[in-house]
Image 1 (cartoon, rainbow, N blue to C red):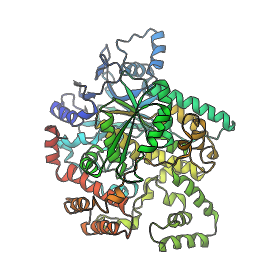
Image 2: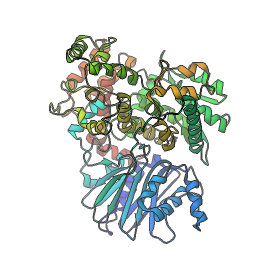
Image 3: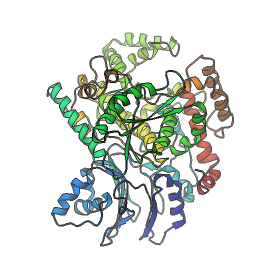
Image 4: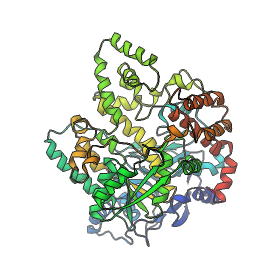
Length: 622
């Protein structure tokens, strides 16, 4: 909290907010109150276990700072300061950050390589600097109030802020949620709370004035004319270096291992640096929804310590409520439960895990990229041809092969692509969403993103949209919240600014070629993995929700809908019809149903039963 009145120090609120996110840092808990700057910190000890406590105050008392995450190049940044005569009392990152801020001011953030959310209070200038990493790996929420500005690593901490008047639902953003399956930054589903966007920093003064600036735009550059072989060599070098940086730790590091190329490459590189590294895999007891066998072959090939978690429907069902709780805002991605379960298992073995997330957005790994490029060839076709495509797509039943292609072929990219997920179109929301507004369209949230790449080809547009929406709103949210739920730190070597700088110069054919996605990545590391892994398509934490909702989870889902307290938003009869149509296989509604089940559960916990939720927090149940 940064209050206008330096005497306005609500230590009780500070401690309650801190307790709400104790899972993010169980190793130490400290707070400081200074001139209206009140900050509490929960530490997960990874670097400088003995001397890295926070909040940190500079020796002269001017700066007080906290930060969440890792700065992988902090030692590189510290050495020039030492050469200039600067002395350091610890081996921690936070001391280096303050020294850099003192010397370079706000622009110091452009020097950092890592994942981070940073707060620095300057007692002379009476300002607070807040900054977030380029990709948005680490979260930072804030709320501007009449008294000043409040910050938190997780949105749930604001449950104890009585001045907020409780969590609320922004009806327009709820409508967008049912298309995107999350609420894109910088907004949240709760209108009083915002997210400091990735690649941005904020400056707040004692009068409550807030100034936000972008310090980096992750744009794709002019393609390099180097040979494919030369680019493959450079990719191998830059990604290996990134993994080396991401393995800097004073505690043991492991890896997540699925059946795909991304996690296999990260595991292969890390196992060369740390032979016998622990690699963890999750799968379910339903045929075709388990990556365990394929992952086991990869682990055997790499000679790593393979740890397997076999999940079932009961474990899945029991984890659901806590998953929704930890996600902060509704995120309707069924893989979240699998991630929560494997993170829980990983936390029993290590404190830090490496993940292959981010590769698909950088190297064009999603199947929809290829399909939409084919559809894009129709954009110059006569309007009558596109009209026929649209008409055919409307009469072909859902689930029939070719329907989605015809739909895409007849509609401009900007009007149909909002990211890797697309749940309901506007027409589909009307039957069950009581607050549906016919004058609102999901394109409102992507219009400005598309404007920045208006002159680029469809693939670059899609990748840029995904990096600025889907990656930040879904992939990284579930990765951070569901690992930190178990006090586990997850690092993502693909999402490194040096890796992106290289990838941003690749040609489309470097990424989509030879009948596959991410071709240059597969090619560059083909000798690291077995031949089957080299060309295996992406699965991405497959969870048999589609099957279970027709059988084992049918009654469970009915009970959630019937027990909903969100009647002002969700029409129960319409939601139950979606469920019944799915059960009888009239339609494949499992993703759509999941979005409704998640919202209802979130609403019950954060709004309808908020008093009970606060009690459960204080009693240690959540």
